[in-house]
Image 1 (cartoon, rainbow, N blue to C red):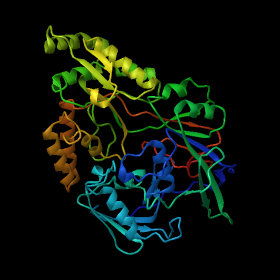
Image 2 (image 1 turned 90 degrees about the horizontal axis):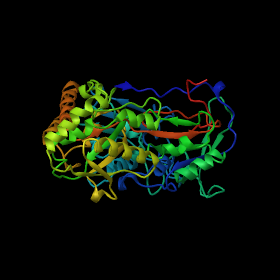
Image 3 (image 1 turned 90 degrees about the vertical axis):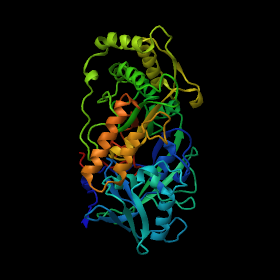
Image 4 (image 1 turned 45 degrees about the vertical axis):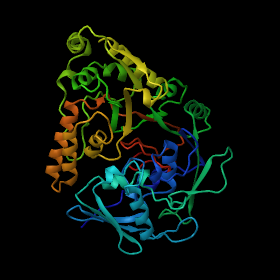
Length: 482
């Protein structure tokens, strides 16, 4: 078995002296310690669970895997067995944390009755067993190199009877403005006494969060998306305070019901090719953001990078006459259908809607904003991937998840799930991706946008591809920094 080493800790000489409690706000409602098995976590809830109910492993500031509840772990040579040794620790009520307890919690999260959003992603898990009081084994049907990243997600945090094991404890008394108070005792090897970290955590709607940050009442704002980004860009912020995660995932449109127009792949392809992605990206003004025209993105585990799409190489102004002609071929003199699109609220979402209305209007479609999912023809998917597995991207479009689907792609995804040989799995996934792109089951636009506001007090923040941010060591420089 190969031992996975823990991430190195940066040099102590690079750490500024902590100066008091850090004020953190997540955009949204007040954070609640919710059981992930009950359903998706809102961003404030995810930050709270991640920081008071760690998983077997966790992310550091840069998105690397480090020890969580497990102090070390081993992976078998065939990749089918992950063995975790738990650190000696207690629940907040003083009772010892045991491997059987943790195994039961994890098995409940991935059981068929669970509403945990990562349940399907962990379909290769055959069993989770306690080998001793402190040792857990996760047994797989097929190798999954991305398993540790999944186990570090807050959706797989270890929560029992409303209690977690850290790294922070939830203090019984609130902060001065009713915030949740998180506390942590840290004993560094070169220090003689514990160092105390305190964080006040709250949730606010986006404009209130921005005002609080601009007034220096908040040190860190998390949870921003494309929809509310213009609020942050228009505010008077200190230089370099607006930060972006290099997030990977899905951002685009998917049909939410069958109808005469969206049932036809030719029409879905016409809609995809008519979007001026570059104009939308210019309007959002996010550094490094690039247009996407395929369901998969580059640098995913085990598969080749997607090939550039031929039509995307031609500027929209040059290809639009052919798109208008294609619309005429498909519809003739008949009126084009009205397309109702479900988008979130916010000025960034307004930019997207206006873009779609202009681009699809140019080929004869009328576009309206849907008031609800029930009235929509298309909805936006804006999701950060929990790991680098291409399967996560593709399995969003299986027939059990979407009304407009391809049964052949589903068969290929089933083959990938059961494949024991990595090359065979990659082949199945590549074919499934090609089917999804060919049938235009998803209309990709770009990568997800995730932004934060970071004050000069915060030295331990780093953008990462998972857009997950630990609250530990916020006043210490990230390892490798200066």
